[in-house]
Image (tube, rainbow, N blue to C red):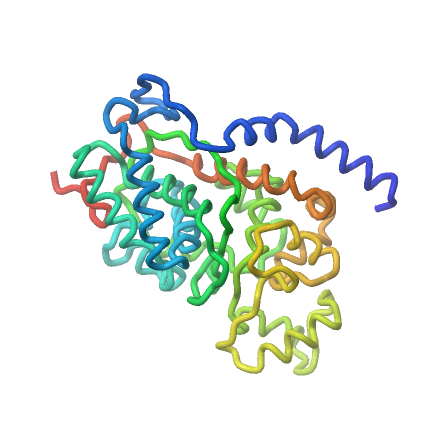
Length: 357
């Protein structure tokens, strides 16, 4: 893209995003609640009368568990993604039954279940049979982004490979709406449809569209890879035997970065940062890395080379505030994915099991 056309695109992107950015800025912190807004529709103040302490309980519990183990905060963000990416945000990932999503191999390293259980127990004590597990998980993931995570120490899974997503204090805030209901169905095979980092951009666009998300959401939410790690096993195919030739590597990888990865990944069980430049900082360096052919996952690097997503990558690489605000917006979009409401589903009294009554 020529400099003039690049500048024009940046300005166009900012104009397109301006209404959303204003919403994100307006939601830049906890909002004052209306006197009441309970009802059958999703709303910011859904629990204003029935459980006014809901968000305060969640925030207090997240702060406590973060102080015990800071790596739980990114684990909750990842848990939220896994829930919403299968059957929508219905807490189906929390069901602990044989053959459920939670028992799928791609869920083996999910963390934070006990945090949700702790929050649910306290809420049931104060507001029995009122707040859904789906809403608890959505609120917990949002509040977890406000916690400090400066270093990842435990492997985890996101996009069905071993990735730890970490966010720093002051990260983007988004205003949630509540009133979701909990699903009664959880199927392990459905969790296996999660992307693994090797997919084509067409596949990823189709996957995100199936969630009600668009290309902008795809590119922006992929920016969560600005922090965290992946296993060397997950990228081994890019380093060796790329097209069946033992010595061949993925030609899209920056040669210097390729040499670094080969030195780093002498063992398949080793870990490598998703962001080679600022691995513990939540910023837009991820996109700058893609411009320099330093995307760790092949699907990441394809975002830069594909004509449908490449212009967005270029724009976000030079517009850090656009990324931060749109990340909040896209996370809110994710939280609103295919929710159950009204008379659909149920309000579980125990997040691990469907109600017996």
